Image (cartoon, rainbow, N blue to C red):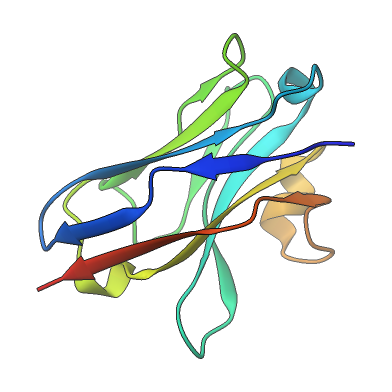
Length: 125
């Protein structure tokens, strides 16, 4: 069983930065591709960024390319979402996800096997 613990959400002003963290306390973390999804009120959950188990491949949504990065630290069992130049449209609940396959994560269906509890990010103008 994989348990994901998120932290780092909160309030930011337009143009500021925030970093989200997602930790997996067990030993399986290096085997898993990781991802961040987000869900705004009344909207579906969408992929923001994903990284392969080794960290060698990353995928970003067009809306965050050049602003967000998803570093994965296998030594610390933690994946991050570094968010720069935040915009009000980045406001959403952000969810960490894990799966053995980055292909499965980016395909959209079926959904990743494991999810965090979600953390709110609010960006004001």
